[in-house]
Image (cartoon, rainbow, N blue to C red; front, side, top):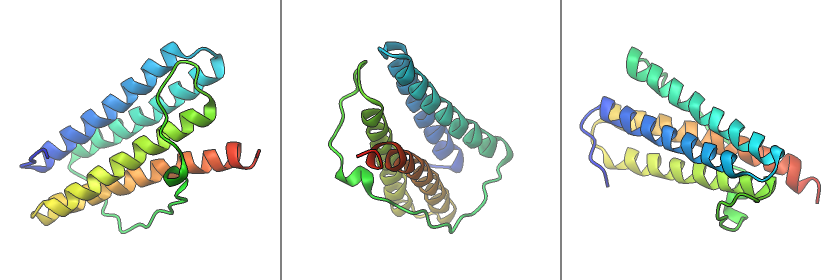
Length: 151
């Protein structure tokens, strides 16, 4: 696992992860076979850009609000199958893919928060994990609204 020596190292890592996620969604948008999926992936990319912007602001200002917030977990991602990205995937598959990516990011930051000894770094990782949980919840709510309710 990557070693972090400072808050700046963590923020740089998180910023790069958000950039990677944004590029991933943009690449899916470019290959999407229909306009609806293209727009969905471009929207996901914009969300990741927003996350990156927020982290960059934290890096530049040094201000990150502490959060003891609990985020609901609908656990929808736990009961979906793994999706392989493809140009012709459905909106449902795109939501599953997004949920699983956010869940993986949440697990990564949670694990990192438990491995560092510095309380400030641990708190930063916990806050990043909470942000990822919020993102996952957003996709789960979307899935619940547009997929589960239709069935």
